[in-house]
Image (cartoon, rainbow, N blue to C red; front, top):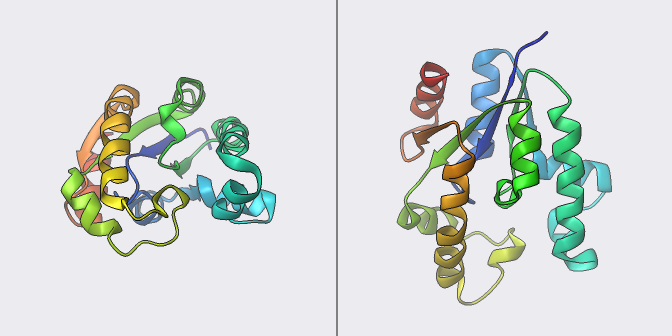
Length: 167
């Protein structure tokens, strides 16, 4: 099957995993969550990798995963929040298909991540500040990387329909 992949990017909490698995089902494609892919390969959670080996090691694993996944066809790939902040990953994943930004205002992100305890970068008392700082740093990079951008504040089904009509 020579179908190009669809690479979803966006900030934490924008719905990459939810929308990705729904989109894959609707389009008859396989869904891969990059963080889960790395966790399976390493036999530990992203949080454990960060805690035991640091962010730099995780980013190296992420680069490897991007290369492996870019070599496959017909996938819907949910990237990690930081994946496409690195030019190398953007270039690698762009070869495999279209990059779609799930765009969500920072206020909506904060609301969705209010009770999140699973993300290593947010395990801090100043969570709101960290979210805004990272968001402001990452959003321009996502916009630069994306081939198309969709409003992720709609329902997952609406977002899928929009992506399908844009592609």
